[in-house]
Length: 119
Image (tube, rainbow, N blue to C red; front, side, top):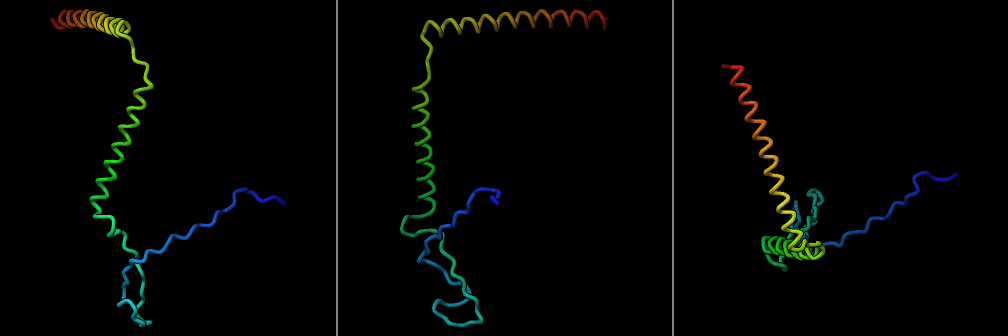
């Protein structure tokens, strides 16, 4: 018989223990069984500077990476020549004027019709 699912479970790797830890429920080295002792790792690493310094450095590095990638993408763009740019700009201006004239006529006609109805 074949097993369904086919994927094998991968073993989780154990995380390295942090030597810096706080003991809750008693003083470190105390052997009192009534107090439950739990070691909680300290999340901040004192050797690398303050949390805010690392956060600012992270945001700056993300921003610099974004700008580098943006520059690379802009180098891939096919930029229009001067002639193509002027032709497409003229076409856009012409079409805007035609549509504006058409909508102006429609608006003028609708206003005349409404004035005739109302009196």
